[in-house]
Length: 363
Image 1 (tube, helix red, strand yellow):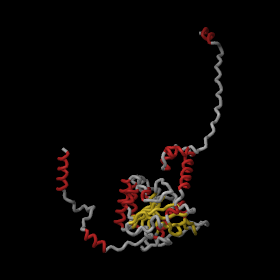
Image 2 (cartoon, rainbow, N blue to C red):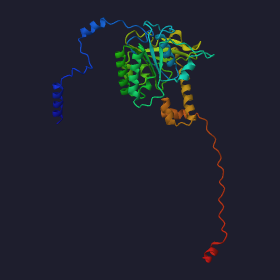
Image 3 (cartoon, rainbow, N blue to C red):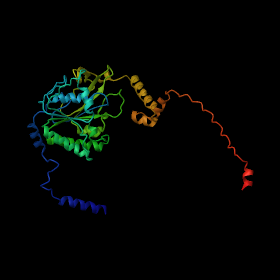
Image 4 (tube, rainbow, N blue to C red):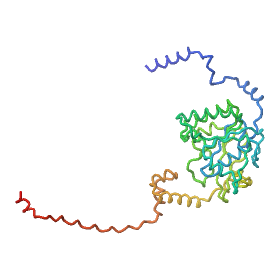
């Protein structure tokens, strides 16, 4: 029975003819044709040094609170002809840039880009910030979002697109299937519209004392395979507000800023401009906290969560530690003194007005 079904399927595939009105998904060319056509393509210019090139879908990822949005906006300002980033030179011609901000509200964004007197930073006129319309009442958010993204590219003539944060487009990116489907759609939009994309992503809870790797990227196996380049932002243990940038993948350049030559920046807020100021290069190991410091920070985080009333199981899930480790750390919590139990007042028996025998004789 199974063999008959296979034969029927084989006959159907052999007899079926392609529909000439339906464009083919796949291209068929000889390797020599590919080589000839590739020679005619222009060289890929750098957009943000060796980290991001034209015609790429590149991923920037970092843990929460490191400053990835600050760097993403700064790269967008450079793309649209604004202030340049030392150590990340741009070879491309500045052009309209779309910055999809799914992280900050208007007030929080504006607060980052004004000085103490309230004077606002002046962005390039062709730097566009896009966020969710609060008046939209539809339910088909996932498909509508991608369709709107493509429409905004056509309206503005944008050449550079930055999406911050990609989790807003698909909240289940930790699932490889969802991550792969979303990135395929983004690559199709990139190809159709002739844009270059920078996608900002996050990392799940991780040990801050370990070097950054592509495995720290949420949905890493699918996203890293489909992305052209990937770089990460890490917190430096040297001084406050210092971060470093590390390349973990590139297809169109050399891996110039790996573990032994990370780019080092300080977060600076000057003249209303919150940005990364280049410090130099160095080894990643010099910016990682010592194991003892990392252990202490992790334990303090666990104790804080337990003190807030969270269960050990919930804390283990949030911190990425085993339940046994959380249980061991929990023993450091101060023991609450047992409150003495107040004795209960004895219940006084109810006094009847008449004896029961007298009540019975009356009836």
